Length: 149
Image 1: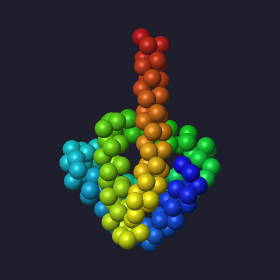
Image 2: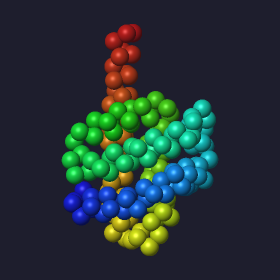
Image 3: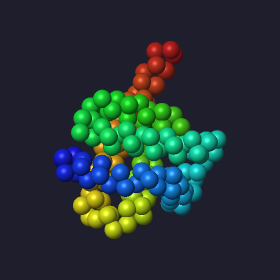
Image 4: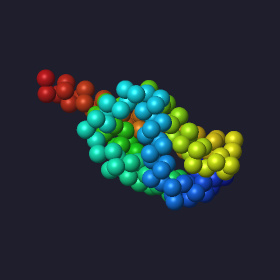
């Protein structure tokens, strides 16, 4: 991401923070509207806690965009855990759509084509790292299965 996109994501995130709980509600409502079956992934999840985790993760990633290297490993680990929950590569497109839609709702007039582009870049960074983590986890799981067989 270029510095202008990073600034735009961080600046607009500050506008979302005061309505974070509403934004989290909008996000999950939209996600489950786009894919009702995705709700099954959260069947045993405390959704209030899940929404807090979503917001904390986004805040951490957004604050680290200028120097993302340390957080990249955390995102890889997150991708591994999500794969274990049953999250597939197809879910990442749905999550991206739900996130961008939520931000559009939350930001109103501040949601411009430039803002959309910047947030798309940020989400792409997150999704690519999480998918990489999921793939690495799958490779590790196959390797450990082969060693024990």
